[in-house]
Every structure is written in structure tokens, then in C-alpha cells.
Image (cartoon, rainbow, N blue to C red; front, side):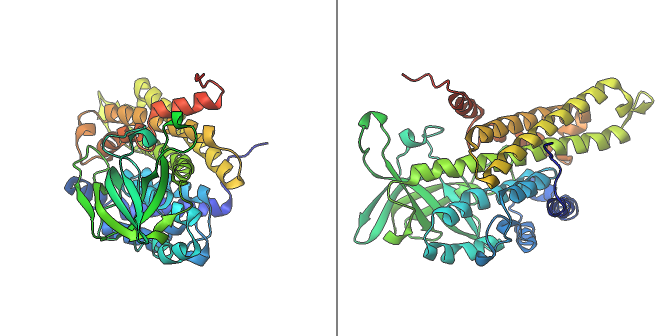
Amino acid sequence: MVSFTLDDEQEALRQTVAEFAREVVAPVIGGFYERAEFPYEIVAKMGKLGLFGLPFPEDYGGMGGDFFAFCLALHELARVDSSVAITLEAAVALGATPIYRFGSPAQRERWLPELCQGERLAAFGLTEPGGGSDIPGGMRTTARLDGGQWIVDGSKAFITNSGTSITSVVTVLAKTGPAAGDRSSRRPEISAIIVPAGTPGFTVGPEYSKVGWCASDTRELAFSGCRVPAENLLGGLGRGYAQFLQTLDEGRVALAALSAGLAQGCVDESLRYAAQRVAFGQQIGRYQAIQFKIADMEARAQAARLAWYDAAARIVAGAPFKKQAAIAKLTGSNAAMDNARDATQIFGGYGYMNEFPVARFYRDAKVLEIGEGTSEVQRMIIARQLGLDGRA
């Protein structure tokens, strides 16, 4: 029989992160959110807890865990707040993982120890202002070799963790040559370049004014004659696009875990409120309309959790997971958005007040249908994996 029960070590991790979220994050995160302030104190405590090093070997200061353990931590954090969860998700899945997976021994030794300890953060420079989901077709950022250095020119948009005072590095995807072979594909040679924070010619824009994720760091980046050593190439020349696809597939599973956590957080808050709020002479949880709404919310959260469990388990086992990653991302983001809307309705007027977590959940949920591949892109991936490509 297939079991979806966590083993003792996984359950211990889940309880530890859940307790941290309740006791450390929950009491103060509302203030950071309202001030649109990055929670450095919380991030430092997450680092001491070992969360940034969860899936990395102890040789680099990591915890020696796996991708499933990392997703489990994201799920529990997001039950309380998504800003801290996305900070962890982007720092690990998008920031440190490409360096660990594709970096040279020297690159790993230089960057990973501080990243695994949470003392520094890494970012992934992918999206461009005019690119959207068409990454290769919309890419305008370029990098060219000159005298043993890469010269990077261009811009990136919506880059998480790119402008904090503890950001150490941004991995930038850039065109390093024209399309090779069949030019009808219109895919240029794309490579990944490591750009350290503070490099001359690398400018970090102001923090975006966002609808949600208000306690996370998201910025636009500009590169103008930005020079870095030739050895800052991450992986092989022209391998950046393939590396990006693998990184994003795994990142989608991580974001699915975060989404499922938000969906479950909506259930948690609604259950508490339904037991406390009295209307027309009794607790609102006694009314069938509220019971049915919360029952639907729990069903969505359960489906979302099992979807990311499946995809993350496949990653750990080394099995194919592209379709399962897309299903998990689509299922999780749908559950988060639907549950946030229903939780806000259950809370009524109070659900529209920022002092209540469900208001933050509602504001945070929408971006989950957009970031790391829109819901439309996930449907395209699923259809193609089913053989419904549609191309001649």
C-alpha cells in the first residue's frame, strides 16, 4: 500500500518549522508586511535553524537533507506567512541550487557555505521587462567575452532577494551568441553568468510596491558594461537555457508546496474564527453554509499537498517529474487562490482588514498563479507531456 505518512525525521522537521512559524514569525510579521520591510531578524533565525541549508550536503555547511524536506519547511512557513516562505524558496531553489548543481568546485566553495547558513542570499536573474513567459524569445540581456571578462548589458525584472543588504550574488541568464543550427527555432545561445552584488555596472532598482509578498524583496536590475571574470560562467557555455528549465521545474514544486501551505493556513484561520465568531445566536461554525465552505477548502488543501508530495518524492528518487511539477504548481496555486477567497468571505468585513492573516493570504495568493510559470504555462506543459503538442 502506498503511504503518504511522514517518517519520524520528516515529522520532527515539520513540527520544528511549524513551531518556529507560530512562535517567531506570526507575532511580528504583520508589522513587517505593513511597513513593506524585509524581516532580517526572522531570516537570521531561519538561518540558525538550518532552513537555508536543508537540501545541501554538510560539506558546504548544509543540513544534508533532501528536496522533500525543503518543501516541507516551505509548506509549514506558508501556513503562517508567504513573504518569509518565498524568501526561503527563492534563496534555495532559485539562488543556491543552480550554483550547487552546475557550479565548479571553486564556485561552490566560494558561494555555498554562506548561502547554506543563511548569512547571505542568492538570486536568479531570469525574467526581463518585456519577456514574460517567452524567456528565449524575449531575452535582451547579453554577455560577451572581452580580455578574460564577461561584459553584461541588459535588465531583469521581478527578481526576488536581489536587493537586500545580505544579497551576495545574482545568477544572470544572458545571450552569449546567435542561434546555432536550425535558426527556425529562433533560440539564441543562452548562458548563465554569476554576478556578485556590488559589481560596477550592476545597478539594483528600488523595491517594487507590490500587492502581496510585501515583506519580501523584489526588484528590477540593470547591467551596463558590467564586467565579471570569465570563470564566473556557471555550467557550460550555451547551457543556460537547459539549466534554467531544470531549475524552474524544481522551483515549481517548491512553489507548489508554498501554495499548499497557504491553502492550509486559510483552513487553520477559518476554523479558529468559525469557533469564535457568534452570529444570530450561535457560533458560525454551526451553520452548514460555513461547514461546507471549510470542507471544500480542506479538500483543496489536501489535494494540493498530495500533488507536491508526489512531485517532490519523484525528485528525490531521481524519477521524471516535469508533468507532476506542473500539476502540483497548477493544483497548489488554484487551491491557494480559492481558499484565500473563501477564507476572506468567512471572515466577512474582518477578512478585509490587514491585521488579520487571511487578508495577507488573499493578497499573497494571486502571484502564485503567475510566478515561476503562469497557470497557462503549466497547462501547456501538462498537455505536451500527454502528447497533445499541437505543433506540426
